[in-house]
Image (cartoon, rainbow, N blue to C red; front, side):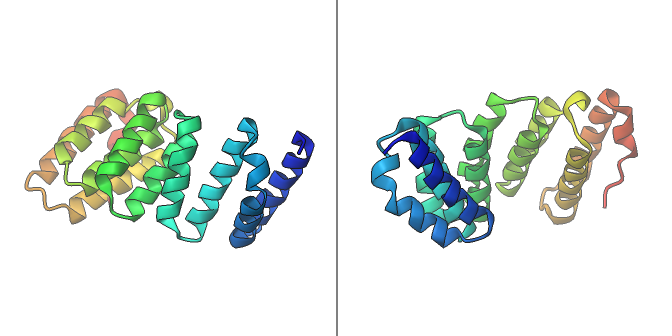
Amino acid sequence: MNSFSLQMIFDESYDLYSTGQYNSSLSLIKESADFWFKSPPYRVKFIILMGINNYKINDYLTAIRVLSEALYYVPNNQKILSLLGKINLKLNNYPEAIRVYSKARRLNRSKFDFTLKLAFSLYKNGDYKVMFDMLKRGYNPKFIKERDRTKLRDLLSDFLRDSSCENKFKMVKKFREYASLKDSSFSKIKLN
């Protein structure tokens, strides 16, 4: 099968996925596996799409297996790492989410979203001190978008509301003081 035909199959599979027909997309991918698996450039594309479809139908264990296979071919793919982290958070597998988000953050330190996801995973795992150390290392006002500020505010508010940590108010206060030195607008962020 030539690459034009493989692209047509991929496009059709993707169209099914994008219209919410995840099982149909998976069926088409599986039916054509003998062809795309022999083509390295298409193999990764189809495997990733298969993993995303499995995620969408809540088949998280299959999604993890398939996306982990995709990482074998493209070990530094940040989208795959991000999705694997998200799935592991859904499964309350915080140590694995921490491992995956740590790798994603090492690959792209300027993307504060990975720092936030890693911090959230650390928070859920009860690693509060490490969480605040990570936030301090990753906080750089040049790279923080407004939606990231909102997520950070929500994370700190959740931590204050839900955490069993004895020093939670002191930890948040110290972080706010640290962040305010780097970014004067941070002191104006109100926690819920």
